[in-house]
Length: 426
Image (cartoon, rainbow, N blue to C red; front, side, top):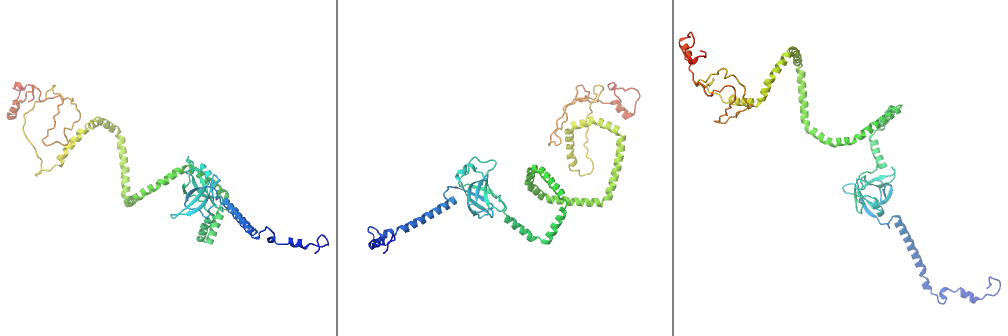
């Protein structure tokens, strides 16, 4: 065999020895060498799978510790998915792990909040489901209230009342399609044409109208609180009107009847008005001519009315005592019942000892009126009126003999003959 280095003989023994298999070499084992490659390949696959798993876990934050929080919303929106962001003041503080529909309506959004962000989130935080654009996906925005709670958000907190969900574009399209299905294209074209004709050349006026509307709304805005109060109490007012509606309708019905009566009696009403005008003219003349006498009469009646007003109680009692006489049972025989009797004569008034005197005091008294009990005797009031029939020294019974003579035999000439009757008439 020729050598590569040049011609010459080649030693076959060395060539055959070098080409001998490994298993034929002393101290080598073919079976032990056969497990190295499979184990190496398996280890490589495991390492690759571990790298992929770690990458997936890091991508999905599987190795980060989070705090669970739940948000209850009326609806979650059509473009809300798990892994959506949870933001506070524009910074991400967590994500949405799952969305659970509720049996009574609404949705429960399960959030995973970063524990390091809990200190910045108050316990009474609100949640709004919104999106950055019309076509963008939804995310949860945590909105702290003006009076934020001092305690931070804790694990397991349920945030209620999230009803602010941005309307999706597909919802707008769905409602628009519903409207367009009900609108006829020809009529819509006519309407748009009429609107175009109405607004053509009136842009400046329309703009001024919008400016005036903005000014009006800016003035109305401070009164919105009062308007809300009015709207809040309106159901009560409307309920009261509803309860009173039968009476109101009855009043309207009676008013229509009165109106009909006025129309039917318009001739008599005109005559009445003319008579009232004539009476007013006559009354004006009478009052104008007798103004001074009427004024004087009113002035003179002042003491009388004052006295009557002072004795109002006594007069009321006296009139009340007459009521039983007026309402009592009548007599069997028509007529009047008189009670007659004879009394001894009383002492006459003498001048100047018995001149009228007004010195009674005590004011008005009812004397048990208007109701006097059975066999009751009202009290006797002793007053100073200038005459006293029980005065000591009164002569008592005094016979007028001269008057009796004249009654029997006619008048006699000359002075009276009874010295005890000197100074007395008759």
